[in-house]
Length: 277
Length: 279
Image (cartoon, rainbow over all chains, first blue to last red; front, side, top):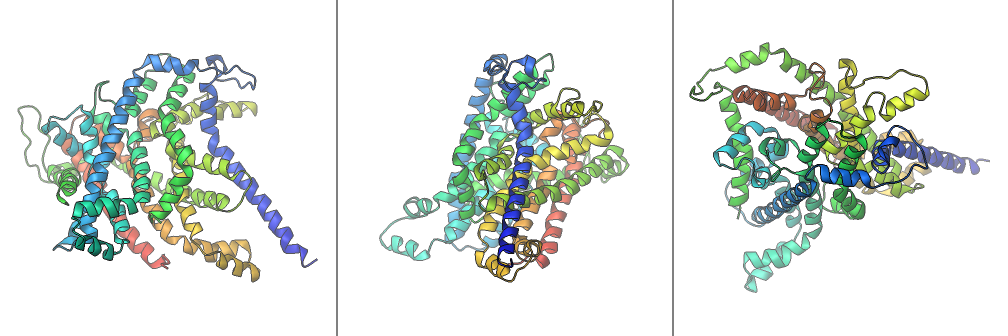
């Protein structure tokens, strides 16, 4: 009897864990599943659950023609690509400087950069808007991206990664006659690939989803990103059906959702390898 | 090499932060009327502003509820999917998916969920013969509906960090505990939780910032109403600065935000420093 008891406890525990895990998962997926259900069914089923209700993509096509979502998709894509490119290039150089060189005031400058991790441009809307007006950039895609292009998070992550690369590599390459740029390109960047991927995923999802700043700084279809477009579309409560709004909602998050479902494992692993713990 | 990144950082983080502080001592200029130095006048107004106190209280309650709740749920999520469990892939996906969605989209989904008479909550209540409830329309419950949205979105994101931390704990610790016959709860409290402390520090700093920074859902769901019941600090800053165009008072409110974030950063650092277990 004494031999069996712990095993029994184990299976009982496992059952409890499984039940708990599933209960939480079902609860968690419920709001999304409900929205998805209405999006894929005709409007008359939005309050009536019927397992055999006909499936349809009509809501998606309705949403697509009722607002310039194609343009919004383009704007968001340009925005996200622009931010990520500049962030990565600038942060690579900065992180390299912090990891490899010694210069006076290095720690103070680094500390000042890290301030951005706490005090983000998101909360400095008022002054940043004034700056954009002075630069004549209000209502441009550049204005949405500019405050985020110098990223403390990217500099921090890349510096941590670069510092794990042995300096001997650096010295050997310098003797071979390689300059800083080739060294970066040939040694540092390839070795930091997981960090780049992790940061890329974070950055893309953050700026794809960003709302408040774009809302303030844009006011036309040509510059508006998806999030702002979606909020305007769903705010016109002039009889837009819920099923259509839900379709638009899923549509705007779709690409990101698919990307994350595909990259889920890499995402988690890269996060761990990048040393964010 | 540093210059481009540092220039951009200073231009959109440090410079505006300093400018915010300076502008909080000046009045708002309108057209030909230039802004003038007013000393502490804006701060006096702040102290007398009922809406400001309401908003501050809302934000503190909001943080106090959402942060421990989302961290607690995140830890349970991580414990569930950390080891082999039936349908692990599905569970992980369910937990994580909300964090990928834009907050605006999340707001739409929950708005539908909450809609009186229409949404799933009232549908379920209807089955049990309960009356319809306008959860977002009542001052007593409105803020809690916003909290639910925030916890729903954040927990899965924090789970990732706990998963990473759990996988770095040596299995031999748990084996040793099992041989000693330690109860599960003791193992969790004495081994798992202390070893997760550094993660909790990191996550809670993020959670605090997010509690003040992420307000997108307020725009779609309530617009700060009813009667400012769901207005949070940053939302109020937006209203003052970009609806009433009172930028000086907006700057004063932003100073409060800067103060809170700095104080929390310092406080959290010292508080956790004593409790955090470093390897």
